[in-house]
Length: 271
Image 1 (cartoon, rainbow, N blue to C red):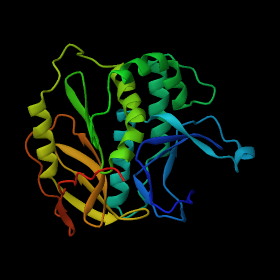
Image 2 (image 1 turned 180 degrees about the vertical axis):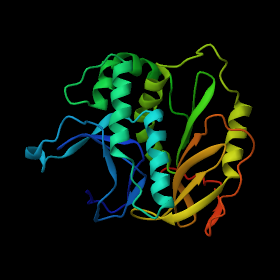
Image 3 (image 1 turned 45 degrees about the vertical axis):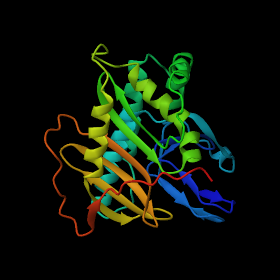
Image 4 (image 1 turned 60 degrees about the vertical axis):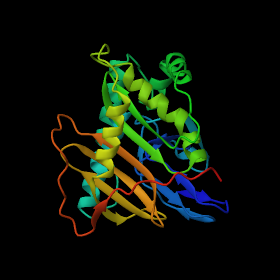
């Protein structure tokens, strides 16, 4: 349950983690919570071994990291499947726990509660060092992350200040996956490669559906790209895109009744 006491809408971004209360959680989808309202939002537990009923009334605290791209991609696949089946957009909890357990084992982390947070804490000094090398740019509203020469995720938030608040946690997630990178000597993608990725994304057909909270949700799932987003009043508010493994060729239409295109986002100044 999210309560927003402010006079402006608040964004809960897909993959953000909150710590505390009965168990640590991540948001399954991006949600825009209306001003002065309360809303139940879909989340996944990322701490399998703790359920503390005595902490029911305790507050959550924002984590210094967001979920890493491998986990976010897994969750995103299940969210899109749920949307196709006209169900609430949720990840599969058992898969989330299995993925975190595998990640913990690869990093040699033994957590008493199976917490994703403990994997980050084990690597915090190195992750912080990587994060210091990835600084915000003027008016930045998104990031296209590449690991070992391959793009892994694109994150976009239309508001500069909102993205600035997310950039640090997102980079921590990128960095955790980068620590396991194979073929680390592969050359980084070029700026032209990044432009081509974005242009392909902007040309991708999407399916629209009701959102949790304000706005309208969208999803896309083709041979080359997959992901979800959120629009409000004709503006693209958020977008998360993942390259599909082994994808070849341009995306094809999904044949949905409410299919459209990913609209080119605005470049709003911070408010």
